Image (cartoon, rainbow, N blue to C red; front, side, top):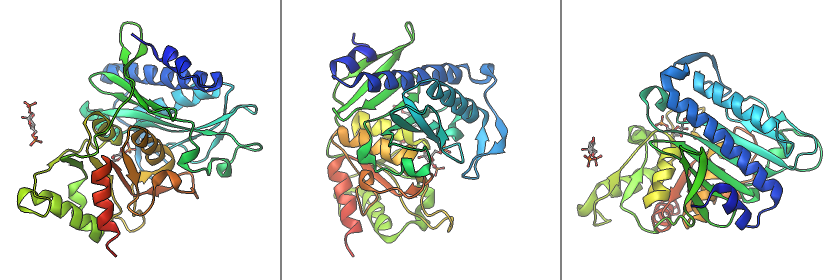
Length: 322
Ligand code: AFP
Ligand code: FBP
């Protein structure tokens, strides 16, 4: 049984990065306990405030956000943080080497129905100088580390430091993450896709055509049947992709003309793309590699198509048809 601490040390990572990852894992352990407590922990229900995206925050969103802010702020290695739940980036420790972007509770609409939620972290190197939004404007290829913690029937953590993707499970007896898969591998081919089908009429032509061909099954141009899954928490859908393959997408749509994309580059798309690529999968907007995007805003949103490499390529083929 190899514990997270031991795996990190065996990977020969800089000791600072090891320490930071242990802090991220610690946040996951504490949020996991709160999620497990459910109503008993007094964390269910809607809080009075809205976040910067204009969405109603759940109490647990706020609790998880504050918990992570406190823990990262107390780690001298962290120079600044950016949260999906905060309007502005926050300066932490002047001599810190890392910036951390996070979604404290992804899939928050699932909290009250006792379904999957998780926490997503993206780590970036801290540039010299002031901590402001510009300091965070780095492509996903700069991430030394990305991870998510999924609070499901088991609490699990998927982690990459650029040496493949590893999966850990939280041992409830010791409250430590234990390695369960040292090289997660996403099969190149799949018969499963994930998309919010209720948005179908709002998609662009390439995604309309691609999904139409998938659901026409054996009788259609793909010549075989596909199955669909949708968890309404990217962390849950990506975990399924890492576990058994699949294609996950949240494409551009015209449902809300002011918001053509749903998922956030810095808190969701970049870290998940790093984890999927390191497991042999692919991640694209339809037109470019997600991790190559030069960000322009901390709360920027993008289209996401990720998962099994051959299937992502097939989907990209529809986008390059002109
Ligand atoms: P939150 O960040 O508000 O928890 O939303 C989760 C999410 O951005 C992403 O994790 C899901 O894939 C997506 O929303 C689900 O969206 P639908 O509401 O369209 O199902
Ligand atoms: P299992 O009994 O094999 O776990 O199947 C579960 C189930 O019968 C229902 O709980 C669920 O609503 C349905 O399968 C899901 O079916 P589909 O694969 O068509 O989404």
